[in-house]
Image 1 (cartoon, protein in one colour):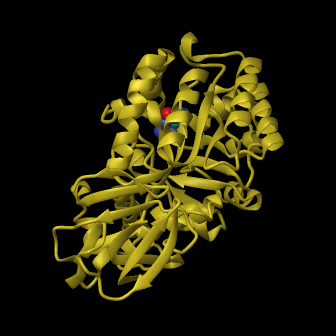
Image 2 (cartoon, rainbow, N blue to C red):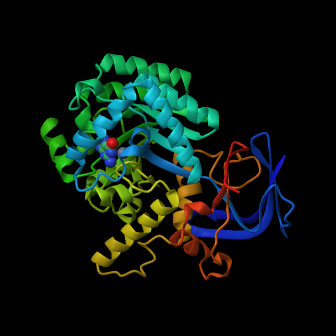
Length: 416
Ligand code: GUN
Ligand code: ZN
């Protein structure tokens, strides 16, 4: 049994959160006890001034891009060709991939990320290595072998049949209902022939798998999709290939008109909002409020390495800043509570909100029976005295406050 003591954060949709002193008991990987009241210093981790909160969930990131953060001054398509494809090619060397995966798991633990929806590369063995390593440590989530059969350097391209065969084997080995599962991951329309997109759609349907891809991140990309697919619009291309399901996570989704938003809402597909990446590549500012008003579930992701923040708390903050920018530009100001999420809402998004959108009912909240994917955080500011404690934490955030990261009941990172 492990005991955590501290201020226990429980958040509800739309930013209603409670912070109360108490104790969390962990056994066999799960939360087995939760009691509120005075906290003594006799707990295994934490103490009266620590925050106990669910681990953070990052719904869009690229594992091979952690060393590529900060390649500034480029737009998406040249950045992919000049920076990202050479970096991903390095994962064709399995020893290199393994050593990088090892570093990346450490970095995720250090920033409190316990759940991921991640892209590996087109390399099958490297993808298996990533699924194995993240799974053994106890992360929750999905990782996909990237599917590409055009418009990248030859070492990153594979024939469609080979990709389908390899991804099918990955799905059998890491099934969709497991804690660390394979995902079907066609990179985006410009990297895939129509046949490959359709194959990916069929494969996902036959396994009920999560689908990950990118959608409408830049205007140039949308124009190129129109040219390459006979003038069809982006959402129609994915819909025709069977890629828009309630288990599809569509990265970015910035440049979408209202009919496309309605269609996405009808399909139940998720948009993974990646605010740091959107500003870094100058792709545009995604309108989260508009998507949600259309009925599209919106998650949040770091999109490492276009995104430059590994910490989901900082990505949450960027989500607030992006919404503020949209509101100010529209003449509504910074006090527009309907369009600008509060810090409590952002905190909910990176924990229970992302979990709920993905249908992961075993994580994201502190409750008896849930997986013990938990963080002990020890801020060095007087956050409990603040009028808005979660806003104080989010805007003053320092990764060094993360004292303990627990995955499936095991302490996997401890700085104390
Ligand atoms: N679109 C296709 N591939 C990528 C990628 O790796 N990163 C981002 N930000 N957008 C993409
Ligand atoms: Zn991405």
